[in-house]
Image (cartoon, rainbow, N blue to C red; front, side, top):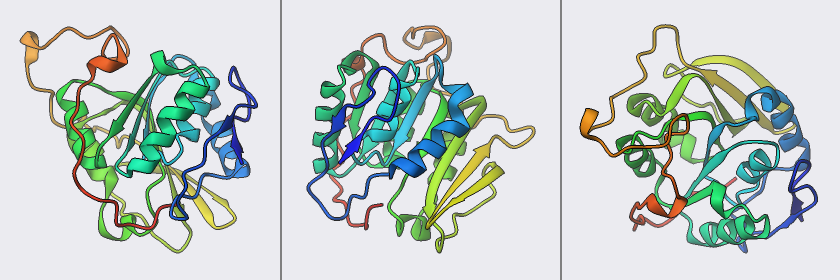
Length: 227
């Protein structure tokens, strides 16, 4: 069973993904994570990458985040996230994307969406082959002063260099890595459109209504072992 630990959705039980390849973050790890970021949550715009059940993004909303974009390419996870968002009554604050992570970041960047907090919980093996931090840096979707939290298995070493590693927290087999923009980081490539781009709400950069964020589904199949 997974649940929301505290906040406005406290105690809500969330649907599990019927697959052994999806391992939700345990309450101990999730509690430690949100103790670290608690002062950043109020009114924030968050990205929950490799969302799984959506429990991390929903915990963020429960504790005061303003909006969360959930991204996962594994369709059973996407179905569970949508159901869990509905269970919490968070539809107006959530955008759920069935999309491969890199493609989702590229499309979000094109729309000028930027985030205060980015949570990454990728399949363990993915970090041995790909670096999700690189596309975040190149596309400039982390706001100045923003924070990335990457969870990984202690035997897997994420690639470094795209952001400054500010802190590491060991929790059993899990490591939480906290990354911030490097000094002098320009923020990646500018969003196209310039002054002629469609207007977006001030501060959040997200569309006025979640359904207006139209991004096509990825046709790639999930092949990695998920956390």
